[in-house]
Length: 172
Ligand SMILES: [Zn+2]
Image (cartoon, rainbow, N blue to C red; front, side, top):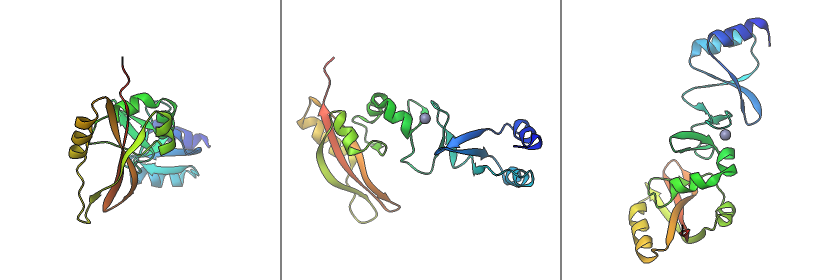
């Protein structure tokens, strides 16, 4: 990296982070992109509207891809950090109709004690609109010693396909 480039990054408070193992700079504007190009910057760049930084490990997250991050307790965490310490993440999903697991695999859910309760749910524009709240209410009523999370099986711009996983509530 040239001194000139280094100086430009410092002055504009731009940082070289890591995105999927490679150097990456999150920029704020087209001007910055042009300027970096002029300075001969070969590092990959992305706009701050689409990229952010993991609050724990500082690696860069593509925020348009729901499989790369999740907000846990108000902090944006990357998938790797969530996998390292998944209990807080799981707690944020339990009995929560607004959140769907897109980070942990079904095998990883199994390791955390979750089993498939019911699959094949769909919500979208194809006429099927299974309602997470109603699903949860029904399962909670019939299994009051269990806790549940939704798992995303697949997703397209028009519909989400999901399953309900449950485990016994850990007694304190
Ligand atoms: Zn992280």
